[in-house]
Length: 107
Ligand SMILES: [Zn+2]
Ligand SMILES: [Zn+2]
Image (cartoon, rainbow, N blue to C red; front, side):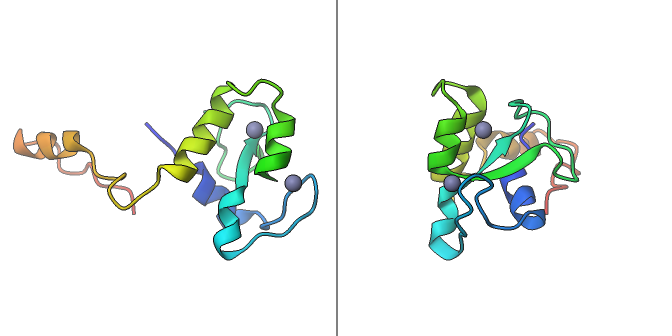
């Protein structure tokens, strides 16, 4: 299960780096990433209380260990997100096998 917490966070938080105060918009927005205050990227309360928007530089500083899962996760979802990224071969397979049908709850 993958929560698109970045889109959620961008919806409810101002597009400003919480550390350096730079503002982001348009194409620059990809440099703004979601930091989890408790460093647990599985903890995504809908009110955004565990999120902080940081630019990639401040975010890097915030995590001294570059291999930290949350940071990796943020990077991947930012860069690898393309038109084909949402397509999963398994959802087709499920349909072919007569799957549940209400698998598409995501808007
Ligand atoms: Zn910053
Ligand atoms: Zn972080």
